[in-house]
Image (cartoon, rainbow over all chains, first blue to last red; front, side, top):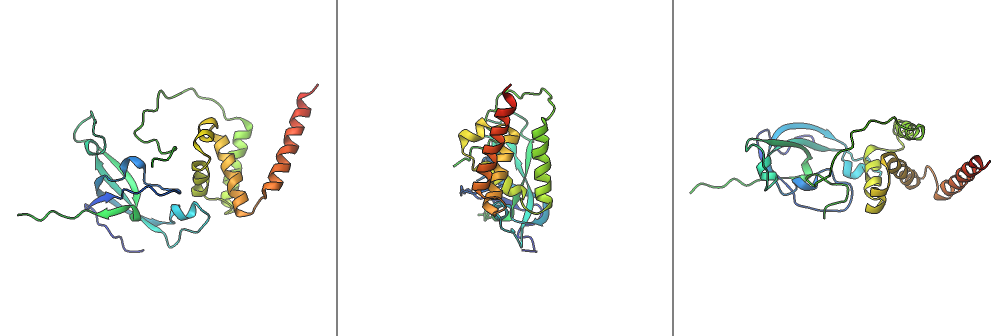
Amino acid sequence: MSEPSFVLGERVRVRRAFPPGHVRAPYYIRGKTGVVERVLAVFPDPEERAVGRTGLPGRRLYRVRFRQPEVWPDYAGSRADTVDVEIYENWLERVALKVQG
Amino acid sequence: MRAYHDLGGLPGGPIDRTEHDAALWEKRVHAMVGLLSEQKLITSDEMRHGIETLGEAEYERLSYYERWIESVARVLVQRGVLTTDELGRKLTEVEAREVEAREP
């Protein structure tokens, strides 16, 4: 769990999952695609710590930037607006690149 | 699906911006959580999980620090720091003391 799975600038999607328990990925961002804005540190896993376990060896946290018009279908602000959300690695998945032609 | 505490993007109504001093018991709750976490008897994630499992009706009914203390009680029982029996007896004792104090 030391090497980050995603790199700066990589497109990632937040998993669409709704397990019970303490989850740090907010509901509104699940299923949305963004770009890794910052690779953060490894922290004890809050999902595990929430039920009295250590959460070690920990999970990598990323700051992911999303385009507001993609997050909110009826977004009335500027098309250039973005929102940053910090998301743990287990909630992110790689977005397959479209092959040209 | 969406948990009751996970409100991002939902209309929330107007925000009450009036300032108020914390009551003594609220300060005590805050201090207690600080001490418990210093003693490694509670984590912020357990606190949050406790609040997220109060049930929606309780969550809506309770004030900010009431949610905290309800959650602390759950976590401490879960961890074996307190028993439900001890907690129940103490709460009855405190209640009796307060009733006595109110009576002339």
